[in-house]
Length: 145
Image 1 (cartoon, rainbow, N blue to C red):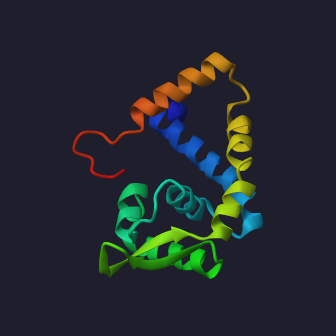
Image 2 (cartoon, rainbow, N blue to C red):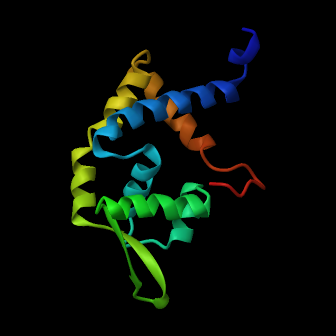
């Protein structure tokens, strides 16, 4: 094996691009991109999050979070509300329409995964998943999520 395909990091990068492209294709019908979807999915696991928390958790630039949340608010999928613990802050929460969209899009993730992992058997898929979980955490000294 020679060239870029000998570099595991490059192969992971290419897989990320391919996965993102497939996800974005499915999300286009909702007027969304993967970055919007990641915010919605995260908000579905919490009672609400400050934009700074979203930035840190998802690894997006804080200025990008503002724009993405603006988009979600314009689509009535999320809204900014006063933080019940600190009125100086606002938290981002899912709306009912946001929850409905997540229910509607529940098949998108498995569809993308099935497409990407079609060449692998079930044991290989389980092994790949376990390995990805192990390496998904940031390296020591790397503060990015």
